[in-house]
Amino acid sequence: MDEIANTGGVDAPLAWIWVGAAVIAVLIELFTLELTFALLAVGALAAAGGAALGLPVLFQVLIAAVVWGLGLVVVRPVALRHMRRHHTRTGVDAIPGTQGRALTEVTVDQGRMRLRGEEWTARLDPDVTSESVPAGTLLIVTRIDGATALVHPIDER
Image 1 (tube, rainbow, N blue to C red):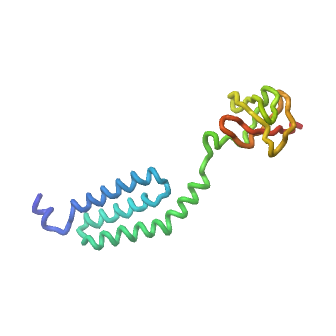
Image 2 (image 1 turned 45 degrees about the vertical axis):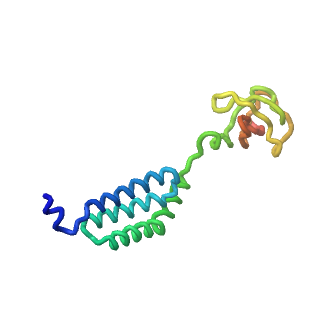
Image 3 (image 1 turned 135 degrees about the vertical axis):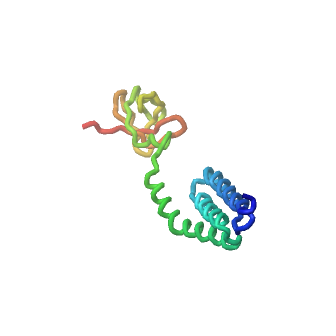
């Protein structure tokens, strides 16, 4: 078995180094989420394939660079466009535009409302209106300020 490993041009240790580089690139990608390091990992895996086939180191580097470069130019823009189009808002970012009902009178200074089954502090959004609204009024959230929903009334006709 050792004779087979030593006779050909196959460089298994170098292939594993490329695989290790790919793993490191994927771990970095987990923190950046911009697909740059993910594509670098794909290039490193392609180079590992070249090493497993016994290609010289220069060709392995060339394979990694070409695969990474093509990925950056061709794959990344399409993938990022797709990811951004399907991005869903979560947490506080998802609340603006949500409707709720005033539990108390809501003014520019204070109030309470029911929002998504929870009780929230609320204030009228001074950019929209400053005319207080009575309890029971249907409200829409324009933005969140700390833990307070800035709202304005909705005409229920």
